[in-house]
Structures are given as structure tokens and as C-alpha cells.
Image (cartoon, rainbow, N blue to C red; front, side):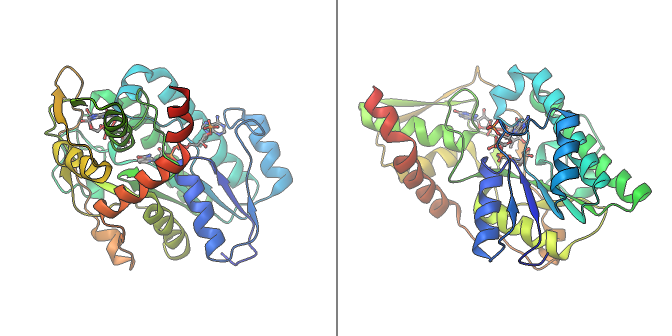
Length: 316
Ligand SMILES: NC(=O)C1=CN([C@@H]2O[C@H](COP(=O)(O)OP(=O)(O)OC[C@H]3O[C@@H](n4cnc5c(N)ncnc54)[C@H](OP(=O)(O)O)[C@@H]3O)[C@@H](O)[C@H]2O)C=CC1
Ligand SMILES: C[C@H]1O[C@H](OP(=O)(O)OP(=O)(O)OC[C@H]2O[C@@H](n3cnc4c(=O)[nH]c(N)nc43)[C@H](O)[C@@H]2O)[C@@H](O)[C@@H](O)C1=O
């Protein structure tokens, strides 16, 4: 990619897409192409094809998707499988048809079997049953990986697939029903502190282990791999370390400064017991995550206070 290359970021207003846009701009890329959801609905095949035929981007970061935490995935299986299959199929096919030089597809660590050996190596894909709460989303993401591989084999299309671990950071979704755990806990602890509540409820048993990567690291890795990596094999993108949800709750409690109790609600699903990525392949490309979890949580809390909390508290 040259600094003047035309680069389309699908989903540029989302957590990852906005971070990729920030990273590219910081590196001096000047020709970044975007469309809001309203301007271009990626579920519409004809509209997507037209967009690619007219704009002819050279590079594509596919960061648009139907995304959510464990409860959203479990509650809306039809939307998660349908929207993700449609968005990725429309974008990957139109990109190839219009002569895109290279495309970066984002999967997820939930593509791996629920009980995969830890840390999870890329070779564990399709070796066992999936976690039921997000199998619909996972199946769509696996189809996306296979589509990139098939287009590479048959059409010589340069498509790479990255498998991010759980992400967090500025621009995250803080809605308590649809969000992932880290933004949900930031909001719960913040609201409990403001209201003087005696306890905060954390879903599940607190025992599952998760790995958290700051979205600025994810964006940096995406741009790096777009530049240096061009193979069929998928690449895990993570930090190589995980924590229990109970430990995560303590990190968030410290960042927010909440002094009440943490209680667990085992009626809510735990999901996969552990999801730690083997990042050997990623490290071999010369890239490592930089943002420590405690620092990333503090920085995300500052972003939350500046961008999300004030209007909502005024409304209370
Ligand atoms: N967040 C995470 O923890 C992880 C994310 N990933 C992957 O990273 C990628 C980005 O995720 P993330 O940034 O978190 O998700 P977000 O929900 O923050 O962003 C997704 C973006 O896609 C857009 N979008 C969704 N549907 C359509 C549509 N039909 N037409 C046009 N735009 C659409 C959304 O726009 P709008 O809001 O206007 O609908 C939004 O800007 C996804 O592929 C996801 O699977 C992988 C692992 C973990
Ligand atoms: C990125 C990944 O995200 C999803 O998988 P997940 O890792 O299970 O996602 P999660 O962040 O929502 O939860 C992690 C853990 O945390 C616990 N937990 C506690 N309290 C809250 C809470 O308040 N909210 C949420 N959401 N979880 C909570 C929760 O019970 C679970 O044990 C996938 O669906 C899939 O889409 C995917 O790819």
C-alpha cells in the first residue's frame, strides 16, 4: 500500500474500523474511502457491486459485521448468521470482481471449537463442536475464511483472514444488553459508583478465561499484516495472555474506583471456558501487542467518561 492508495474501510464507524482509520491517517495515508451504513447497506448485493465498480478501491479492510456480546449472539441467531454471511459475501465478491489488489477479512477467536486445546493454534479450526451461544456467528465467520481461501485458490485473489481475540477500547458499544464484557463492566461499575450502589452484578460464574486486546493494537496489527502477510492460512491476533472474568472485574473496579461488592449471576451463560490464542504465527511476522490491560482499561474508561457517560447521566 502506498500513502496515496485508495483504501476502503467497511464499517469505519465501528470499534475496529474507526481504529483502522485512525491508524492509517496517523501513518500518512490520504485516500481513505468510507460509506456509512445509511449511505451503503452492505446487505444489498447490487448496491455493493455498484459501489466497487464506480469507486474501484485498491485495498479493503472488511470491518463491517453484525457484532455483539454473549447475550446478543445467543438472542439473535438469525441476524448473526444472515447479516454476516451477506455482508462478507457481498464485499469479498464485489472486491474481487472490481480488481481490488488485496482484502483483509476479520474473523474471530470464536471460530474455534469450544474445548480447543489452549493456547488455540490456527490448526485447531474445524476440529470440534462450537460454543452454542455463538455458533451462528462462528459459522458465518468460518464461511468468510473459506471464501477468502477459495477465491485465493481459484481466482488468485489476495485475501487474508485475521482472527482477533476479544477487543476493547475507544468507540466500543456500552449497551448493557448487546455489548461485550469489558465495556459492560466499565459501565456497570461506573453507574454503581455514581449511584452509591452496594454491589455490581457480573454475569456467569466469573471463572471463564478471556484474552483482551486493545483496539489500537488490533488496528496496528491489521495494517502491518496487510503490508507484510499474503498467505492462505489464517492468523490469530491476540496478546498471548488471559485473565478470568473475576480478575477482569477487579481491574475494572480499580480503574473506576468502585468500593462496593462484586456478585456473580450464574443464571447467565459463561460461554466458552477459555479462549486464549496461540500468537506464534503473528509474532513471526514481527508484530507484538503493546497496550497493557490495566492501562488500556484506564484509557477506555477516560474515553467513556468523555464520550458516553455525561449525556446519559444528565438524562437520569
Ligand atoms: N469487538 C470484538 O471484540 C471483536 C470483533 N471482531 C470482528 O471485528 C470486526 C469489527 O467489529 P467491531 O468493530 O467490534 O464491530 P462494531 O459493531 O463496532 O462495528 C461494525 C460496523 O459495521 C457496520 N455495519 C453493520 N452492518 C452493516 C450493514 N448492513 N451495512 C453497512 N455497515 C454495516 C456498523 O455500522 P452501524 O453501527 O451503523 O450498523 C459498524 O460501523 C467484525 O468483523 C467482528 O466480527 C472479532 C473479534 C472480536
Ligand atoms: C468476541 C466474542 O464475544 C462473544 O463471546 P464471549 O467472549 O463469551 O463474550 P462476552 O464479552 O459477551 O462475555 C465474556 C464473558 O464475560 C461474562 N460477563 C460477565 N458480565 C458480563 C456482562 O455484563 N456483559 C457481557 N457481555 N458479558 C459478561 C460472560 O458471561 C462471559 O463469560 C461472542 O458471542 C463472539 O461474538 C465473539 O467473537
